[in-house]
Length: 209
Ligand code: PRP
Ligand code: URA
Image (cartoon, rainbow, N blue to C red; front, side):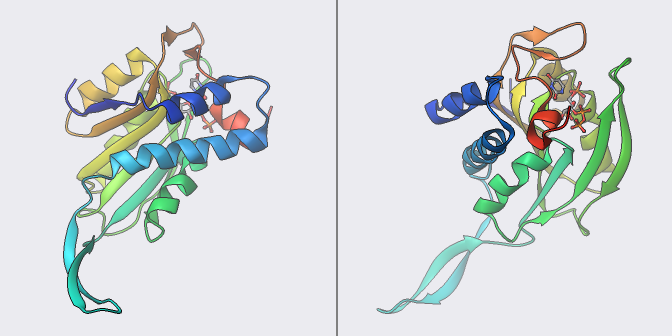
């Protein structure tokens, strides 16, 4: 699939295996989520635009590249996407952060929006949407719809674990965005949870339930 990157780096795979373990506690789960987001972000941000700037070294003045323009916006899908934000901010501390609040109805599995606040202007920014879980794809498709309605154009979607159903749905709805997936899992179960997955990402990051 064009515009889809599924990571095979051993560090990412190792950390995802630790996330899956039901005995991994909240503290470690949070750290691992951030670390994986940073490792994925390193690759996902390889096309950030650069510009040559003048810098005086102790030896001489030179022209040298720095990240240019309006830079980056990170947009987590609440709640679980929040767990990935600091990993991206570790790479680009000056990034702006927007928020999209969505929850899945437990019966229908349809996403419902309850919050949306995006940095403005957003048109020229590279926007990295974060959500550890891409399950049915409903939340991801809605989030990208909102961002496009608000003028977002350069959009990347980053999820740690995806189900084939969700990846297909997001890619078909938004073939223009680049999707980064830490691991592609087997399938969804009857409750639309990813198998083998890691359970409920929001509950595991925030220690709820
Ligand atoms: C989870 C997850 C995604 C969504 C994925 O959020 O963080 O946002 O489900 O499912 P989908 O691909 O089928 O839409 P949830 O709705 O449980 O909310 P939470 O993060 O607040 O726990
Ligand atoms: N949301 C989660 O947190 N986990 C899943 O497996 C599916 C949706």
